[in-house]
Image (cartoon, rainbow, N blue to C red):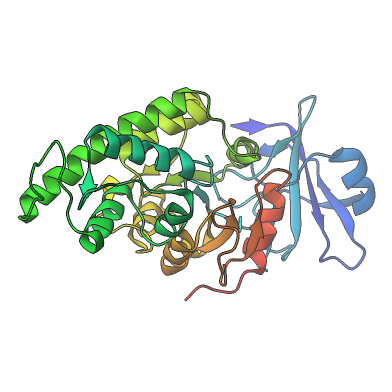
Length: 345
């Protein structure tokens, strides 16, 4: 539907750094005739009024790269001209198709909650390797969770190296693949419920996450969450931390159950790109660990790190940026990261 509006397109690629104004009545997203109306500095001060601008890099469109574009409906509020990665006003193409979050460690600093839930599970089922009750301390779990992705693979890896355990589920250590899988599945199911109990006790999202999601949504950029954890666990976590409305508005949600191979295998991010209809090279992943970083890069995506206390000392070579958390990080800043990132091969 056509709307009466004025589209400001501020481009630093012009020698005079002027702001160009299309004041013709036109459909949402079209430019129309353009004329100079003022300086870029004035426009940013008076028109943007401190609000984040939509930006895209590269040289696409007749205005070239470095473009900022805002639509100002007559008598209405400022709204972004871009919609879900399509061309904004015909002048340029969005440099970011999708923003993709890991869950554990990124949305929620959850690793210690997982560790506690595992230990409660081992205690409940009297899981013993030899004569010793299995108990994962903080130092060991920091190494484990940064080595093996997914809950079931963690236990399988541990038992393969320390001997399959006895338990109230199996009086003798399971020897067949079927019995070992039954043990792992039963422990994981109970652990998931204990983890949910810990979430209910008052867990909160990490700084900046909700703000970035809302900013991306307002700019028409697709949103996804890709977690190696069990689906029921992640759904519960996201519903509680993001709220039902934000969770249901995700354009894609994948959990460890949805792919055969867990991170660092890139499968989950490759599947996400397909479901989103997004170019992997125009997707930005937020991860907290080397495992997640490897998965994102393996899928051909740009990755930034929001590290936690347990991952802060990892070598994040290949990440385009690294933050202690996302508090104060704007989407404009992240788009610039994507614009400046080298192609991921």
